[in-house]
Amino acid sequence: MWEARSARRSWFGTFKIAAGTAPPTFANIRRNRLKLAKRLSRLGTETAFEVLVKAKALEAQGKEVIHLEIGEPDFPTPQSVVAAGTRALEKGHTHYCASAGIPELREAVARDIRTTRGIPVDADWVVITPGAKPIMFYLILALVEEDDEVLYPNPGFPIYESMINFAGGKPVPLPLLEKFAFRFDVSELRQRVSDRTKLIIINSPQNPTGGLLMKSDLEAIAEIALERDIMVLSDEIYARIIYDGSHHSISSLPGMLEKTVILDGFSKTYAMTGWRLGYGVMPPSLQAHVSRLVTNSVSCTAPFTQIAGLEALAAAESEVSEMVAEFRRRRDFIAKALDAVPGIRCLCPPGAFYVFPNIQSFGMTSSAFADYLLNSAGVAVLSGASFGEYGEGHIRISYANSMGNLAKAVQRIGEAVERLKT
Image (tube, rainbow, N blue to C red; front, side, top):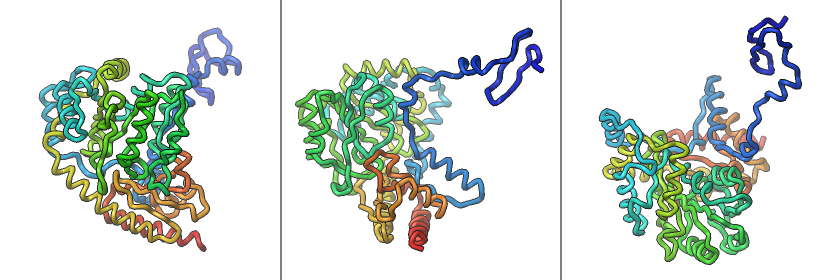
């Protein structure tokens, strides 16, 4: 019996029934269902976090899992940076600040960019954001209209394609293939650019492959961008984590300073993923609009994290060098060890902290192979297809883990591959 003003729970949800009213009908329930905006159906995700949930569920059952799925340094944030952030909290830097960031950090970032990229920028070119992802989001919202085309690396960071779709643009993948050491074919680049191309996204060193674009690659993109008046988003978040070769920013090429937005941050270089501190470097005319998007979304970036970022730029160089040296040691080990596993082919990447081994010989999809390693071997990796259609046939392994765990993981992978033959 339906009682006046009672709350009854069913599989439809929770409804409060006023006195003298009839119970809800199916028609009323259907009308009252949450109606989401269609654009949410175009929003993707990061598979790494989904795999982490699966891995944690196995651990809750008592199974040991080696985590090679999450893309973050396993090193602590440098102690001097933690201390600077703590002092900032104690001194009361816990209130609003300018949407574009505190002046001291904007100037420090500009100074660092002038030094590392060799380009003449000042603080007016810099926007500080809570993590580097917002720069992708804000730039695409600022530039891309309905049905505009955006060229992006594939396999690549999945949020590129997700945000292009969300904004109503058309994602156009630029294949990065193993036969080119995960660089692109210049002729393919030219074929995929059209009169509707509004933005080109590049990432070097790259997630998920660890590939590194050469100066000649950047020159080919610059030629097209200048010829067709196309902006470039240059994701340089791994610019300090390079083992072979050198980092080149497309912004330093003739004519490209005004056509480029640099995305960078503190998460990878300074092991500050949880601090959420990133930035974009862009022409001041665009910076003003991006700052307005900051105002309308998050208001500002926490000032105490920005003060910690100041310390990172000023005094954490030795910790960065030590971290990169350790990553190099791990890369050398895991690339060689995986390449020796029968059926697996693994290039030795020049940057970032990922390997992208080829597993096509096993006749399984990347997703099936990744699931097999998790459930059969207790090794959490990511499907290459999670990074786009051209990642199929590969898996991504993050070597941001200890040498002991990496050795154990390779042994488990080898044993799991051997079981596939029986």
